[in-house]
Length: 47
Image (cartoon, rainbow, N blue to C red; front, top):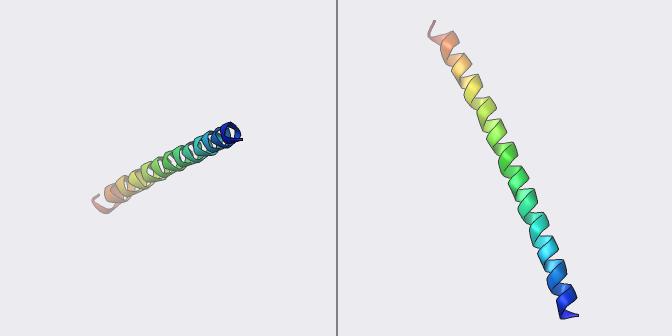
């Protein structure tokens, strides 16, 4: 029984890690979009 619980815990931990990894990748993509938008606005303002 204990081995089964450990196996389930590892699978759950791996799912959480993959989910967090995906969240970080999404955040990085959003930050890149914001960065490019700010750069475009700066070019427009300082023409």
